[in-house]
Amino acid sequence: MCSIGNESGATRDCVITPILIGLTFRFVGEYTSRLLLGAEVLAAYLMFGTVTGILMALFLDTAGGAWDNAKKWIELGHFGGKNSDAHKASVTGDTVGDPFKDTAGPSLHMVIKLLSTTILIAGPLFMVNIKQ
Image 1 (cartoon, rainbow, N blue to C red):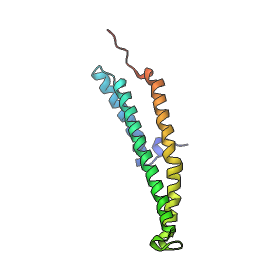
Image 2: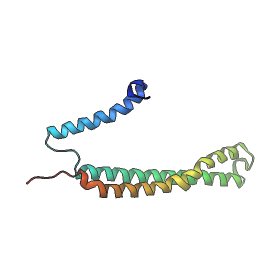
Image 3: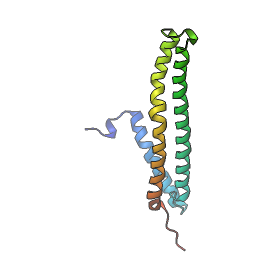
Image 4: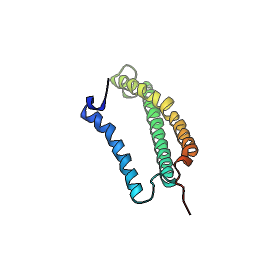
């Protein structure tokens, strides 16, 4: 049986901190009579997620391609060619780079699509009813 009391201090902080932040925003929203779950928050979440996803995908694609090209460059005879220490290091780099360019970068495209679709569908649930 596991409970928060049995967890370490760092784990407990990781669980309690988001809860406290959520409650703080909830109370601030009620105090100011402006709930903090409006269109502005959803738009900011969508923009932040999209920009972060694009930058991360660009980084992963570029880094993976660079590691792959470095290995090919060394295999052409530069920096000692095949069976050199540079080639051994480039094989290790290429092992990391292939998943970067082939899977991680392109999969972020799907994450961005999922984020956009989720916000468009669930957005009305978070909208505040404005009484006139």
